[in-house]
Each structure stands twice: as structure tokens, then as C-alpha cells.
Amino acid sequence: MKYILFALVLGAVVPAALLMVYSRKLLWLTAFLMQSVALLYNQTAINFLSHETYRGTARGMEISASYLCALTLLLAILLRRGRIRLAPYAGCWLYGAYFLACVVSVMNSESGLLSFFELWKMTMLYLVLLAAWNYLEVTGDIDVFLYGMAAVVLGNFPVVIWGYFHQVYQARGVFPHQNSMGMYMVLAGNLFLARFFSGRNLWQCILFALAFAVASVSVVLCYSRGSLFCYPVGCGITIAVSLLYEFKQGKLVAALAALVLAVLVSVLFIPRVIERFEKAPEVSGQTRVQFAQCALRMMNDKALGVGVNNWGIKINPPYPYGRPRDGSIPGLNDEAKDGIVETVYLLVGAECGYGGLLLLLIWFLYHWTVAVRLLRKLAHSPTFYFAAGAVGGLSANYFQSALEWVLKQQINYMQLILIFTVIGYLNFAWKQKRMETLMQMRKETA
Image (tube, rainbow, N blue to C red; front, side, top):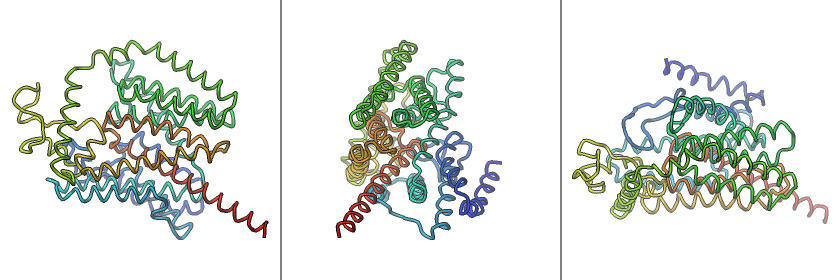
């Protein structure tokens, strides 16, 4: 039945694109769905050539409803404008360079098919990037992606609450893992907080205050130590830059209200949070250290990496990189399959080498730097909130990625790509507007 539904949706791509040529509302709805269908991600995604038991970052040639929405959106814009931009800003070239490093690492792969799964995922994410960028060029509407995230956060919350009242210790909602949900809420929560500060009408303030509160409670209930540590840091940065670049008395009152809310939530859940840190198994910390050592062995042995999405193979025998299997580690024997290193950076370094890791860091740092520079450029404009939320959210996300690898989960990766795209577009639009202003001034002077 799932394959039949997939075939029907795929067949509807072209007709839907044709309708969107004449309907701006359908264009908006598709852009909204591209993010919001993450609520039903597993139910609407098909894994061709599936390897479901593999312990890696991609387990099949995945096509999800999000990717079909992106394809439909891109086709509609092509029909409307007669063209689309394929490499619209500098971040695309950095992503391309990182992608190339991943391709080169396949030389050392044990399984080229598993590497292909990750490369396919990265290609589909670039499709999302192109769809988002070209949509923004046509409409200039960045809020649609924030509404999409709000739909995910609010739609996910009933599942979280149901789990909480049914003694689910670490809630994960509709996400594949509690850490994945935590990371999504950390990024989204910072954007909601910044949007709340910049709200220009009552209903938007109410909506994003609610979304921020729900995201915050979800972070607490997932009991992800990385999320619990990084979220307050990100929110603190978001509040600080919002007040620094756009100080208003109302914002200060809102910041104090957010602080009061945080204290109330902390008082309510602090015993469980403390328990999460105090009763974390000692073997968990040891495992993190051992996996980090394994990753460094891979990086030092293979300059180009052991192969993208091949960690799950190379960490196990007969390869020499894994942990000892002499009975010193409980539960680990010759038949067991070891897990994944708990940091995106060492995982990329192990699979794609030092060069791949460097390109990933440059790609990350580029967008964070652009967001920081946009704070001054967009101050007192309607889009300032996105730069403020992105600076805080990305800071938290990058720190959390040093503690967890879940950024490579499809939902989290797509969320990051969309935020990067909006940052790139806002910078591009600001430069265009500035150039037009300068040209107008020159004409008036002449």
C-alpha cells in the first residue's frame, strides 16, 4: 500500500506543478508541506534497496514526501519563470566541495552501495535547497519555513505528552530518536524566540510564544544531555543579540517573561533532569571516548577517510579500528555490531578524512558568519528575527553536534539546509537592495 501511495503521489508531481504556475497559494502550501510533512516522515518515505539493520547514517535510497514537494516546487517555478538557479550563492559551492570530498572517500569504501545511500541523501537535500531558494526568489516569503517548523513542533507535542504520561522516560515524539527531536527543537526554539521578540501583531506573538514554549518543554522531556546543555546557551545568545541590535522595552519585558517561563519549567522537571545527569551510566562516557579514539585511528590511517557511510562496517572486525573484543566490554562480542561515534565532526573526519572535516567546518562557519553579519545589516527590518534566531540556534546546534551525531538524521539535516538557504537568501537580497540604492543615488547625482 505504501508503494502504491508513493506511485500516486509521484504521478501527481507534474499536474500539481502545472496548477502552481497559476496559483500562488498552492506554491505557498507546497513550500509549507516541504517542511511540515516531517511529522509523518517515516510513513511517507520509501527506502529503495533498503538495509534497515545497518548501523549507519543512511540505510537506503530514500525518497520522502519532502523531496517530492521540493521537486514539485522546483518544477512549478521553472514553468513560471522559464529558469531556475542551480548554484545561487557561495554556500552551494562549499556544500559541493564537501560533497566531492564524500565522493572521493568512496575509494576506500568496503560497500559502495552504502556510500551511495548517503550521497543520494545529500543530493536530495540539495534539491530541497534549490526549491527553497528559488521559491524565495519568486516570493521573498521566509516565514513559510518557520510556519512549517511550528507545525512540526506543535503536531509532535501530543505524542510527547502521551509518552510522558505513559512512563516513556526519554520522549522522542515522531522523531527516530530522542536526540534527534532534541536537536530539532533547539534550532526551531531559537527561531521561535526571535520571531516572538519581533512579532508585529498579536496572533503572531501568541503563536510563536506557544511554539517556543512547546519546543522548550519538548527539549526537557527528551532528556538529551546535549540538548539540555546547549539549548539555554543558544537562547541566551538569541536574546542577547536581539536586545543588542534592536533594543526595545517590550523586548526586555518579553525576555524576562521567557526567563520566568524557563524557571517554571525547570522547577517542574528539574528532579528528572538532575537524575538524567547523575544516573547516566558510566559506560556511556567510556564508550564516547573509545569511539573518539577509533575515529582518530581511521583518520590517521586513511587520508581520504574510510568511506562515507562506511563507519558501521569499519568499526567492526576484521578491520583494526574498533574497540577490543576480549570480553572487557560488556555486551560486545564477535557477533555484536558496534555503534556510531557520538560527534558529527569525528564521524565526518573518519569517513571523509581531514579534508572532508575541514570543508564541513568551513561550510558551517560560513553560514554562522553570514548570520552574524546580517544582524547589523537587517537591524530594525522585518527579517531581522531570522538572523538573530539563526545565530543562537546554529551556535547551539554546532556545540550539540560535538556531542551527538544526529545532525545526519534526514529531518535534522533538512532543517539545517533550509536555515542555511534562508540565511544565504537574506544576504543575497540585502546586497541586491544595497546595489539598487547605490545605482539610484548615482542617477540622482548625475
